[in-house]
Image (cartoon, rainbow, N blue to C red; front, top):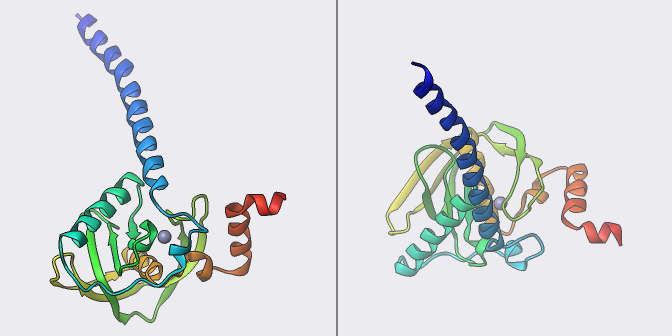
Length: 197
Ligand SMILES: [Zn+2]
């Protein structure tokens, strides 16, 4: 009576872990491929100020599409154009279940008075996590990739994510926002050869 049931049960156990492992390996491979297309620390474009977007054309929409795909593959929650070597004021972000969004020419309309410190990583600074103090609430205004006005009010994690991406458009990295001790540690991670000689 129990034979078929047991068989199915074993079958499930045999197959599912393998599928998970394969899926994980594929995700890892996609992540590595994406990271290879994202500018890494030391690349000068990460330190430059991006320019205002003037034309809301197919070129811009293709850029946004490519950045969203890279963000997904890299398993990130945000990506700025400077991180792909494009000096335009555009970033994409997805801090929650509401799907990926793009913000073009973003400006801070309002910054909450309260701030909090939490660890942040960056797709351009692999292996680094440092505490960064950010406003817990922020209001941004800008455009979407079609040129329509966008007004977003964000708090907590989402507010942190967009402030991080906004920094990228001005050539600012989390290294500039953390304390001396964590900066030193992070630089040792990013420049192992300089330390080892
Ligand atoms: Zn970053």
